[in-house]
Length: 179
Image 1 (spheres, rainbow, N blue to C red):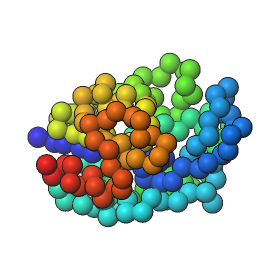
Image 2 (image 1 turned 180 degrees about the vertical axis):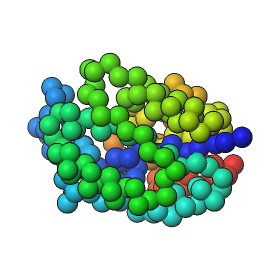
Image 3 (image 1 turned 135 degrees about the vertical axis):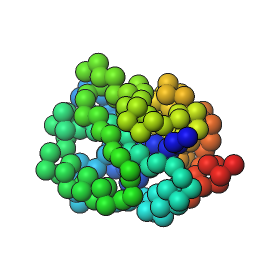
């Protein structure tokens, strides 16, 4: 049986950026965003070690990330490619990216489960034995819709979210998947 840990990117693999009170993406006011420039990109502490350990436990490590900022004109394609070149140095077995805006009607954009379902089909993943590690309501929605267990990386912005598990640091995921 193939099992996986799905990881969100922004807020899990790398730090999110505080844009302040008056920042808009499309028509939606947002405070925390993905990096819009390579110079803003910082890995979360412990991500490399976590990915290696998750792999040693027999789980596929799959990145599933919404990246609409290119379509919204906030992230130049060249900067996205530089950021993803850094991410691709990590021990991910596969990467799935949705570039669509929130109103494009895309089935892969979280909270819909499209990226998780595509990965499950490609890799023959047993979803009930798998996990989604995220930091937002969209990550929870995708986990629930795909039938995987949800883990929220708590950061003060998301403590109110109801998931199967909350962790304070990434290394805690190892305790959860070892249960």
